[in-house]
Image (cartoon, rainbow, N blue to C red; front, side, top):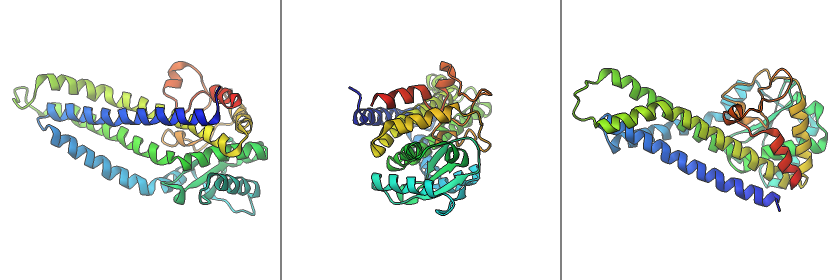
Length: 298
């Protein structure tokens, strides 16, 4: 029998497994490229240090960057009492500090959380979601977002995004270096040159797919943990139905912030997210029908 606890535990295990292989993948690609360029393990160490520095910078600036990119503004308790009540209730249920509350002036119903840890968290809702959802549905959405905060999902996705960026830069570095190196360079092993070339071409694509897979797993986990906070999975399921059926397209959505929202902000003209397997493979979110089905089976 599917329970809230079993779904959450399953998704945690799968996400850790994916992240483990992601790190191994980054190390392997950098090793191939390092050997092809004649540097070996020292080259891997340099890129790990670069990754660490970039992750550190992103760690401290991610919330400010996201809020600026989305145009979100601080929300007062007097202007948005229902939102504040939902956030206070879910923060208390999760045993977390009260996050900062923001609102996006956008008719499309959606919400997101950001911040490096629970002490520096931000929960943001669009004006569209506040207008369309009942209180119990809004609590389901906020419970989902507080679960992202509790599980440090914004930090996790931030680190993975940096790893993807490092792989892209590393691949470009190798491909460009091929134009400036002599064919008779004895330091280069031909086998590693071939492996590095294949890795430089395919690694950024594979890394992006892994990044999206992690994002989708975290959405499933946040659904399960959010339902655990509210003790009412159908509230979130009903909210997701309304969000998916709404025809509005978000004005401030971008590829770089899409993974933060509770549902994919990119929609077709009919107001529905596309559902082909190819699109789902490159989607930041799992199919909403599947999320609703799991929630209603709890």
